[in-house]
Length: 377
Image (tube, rainbow, N blue to C red; front, side, top):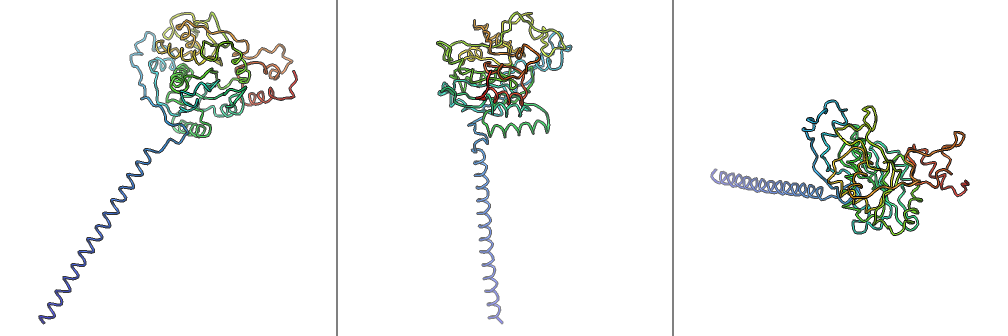
């Protein structure tokens, strides 16, 4: 019995020892898996942080959001102003907004930006996808013409709310990933923010394209003969973009519209003077890189006015510069001498630089008609 008892105790001891080592082994394996998984999670998180943006831009330049100035409500007559003007006054001081889409390498880098002869700066809105697509296929096509480069940028804010805003944002991301030509900031894209859009672009230009020779600043509903533009700019004597140029459809002896029903209503709370300096209408105008940088410098000390074309003229005036008239830029449309003549006859358009107000199908057709080798005028 004693021998049997000893054998039984030995067996129990052996089993307990084996169980102990088994538990120890399993604990080590579980710990190793836990450490490995934690390492992998850390590595995935690290890789996610270092992953480049989904667009071809190298980075997105960012500012913090700008908050409204509540004291604007103390302005005399504030409560009687339309809602959009109240909103403008609340945010009039804001000059920096987070950037959502960027193309910092559009001009090949700041040091190489002089290689861009003509930069097309096109004011667009998020929902105008069809217009942008037509422009990319026609006058805003990036190309080498007469030995010099034409490049393209669309400048936008944001639009819509809720799901609509999300859809528009996704659409712009897809456009940008394909075409690499959109600058977008996180502010409301509205007519009274056009000046803000211009200032934000000029700030971007100073950073990324400071030596660009010339610019076309225009809307996305203009017909522009960019071939003619290049030839006109190349014909300028002693100006390769390093001297003053600001040419367009000149407006003189005009002042603010005080009618609240007008789209261009400017109350005295925005602009007290009854006159504007001479300005080029905003549908489209040409300027040199030099002048663009002068305007940006002057803008830093001039209060924002929602009329962007007038604001540009105010910046020019402060610098002692003036805009000039160009007969090929027609921001009030073409004058056709007879109702019996086709208003879209390409012979009227083949020699102009800019004509305002074109629908996408009209623009697409006109571009191809004026380039028809069989066109006879």
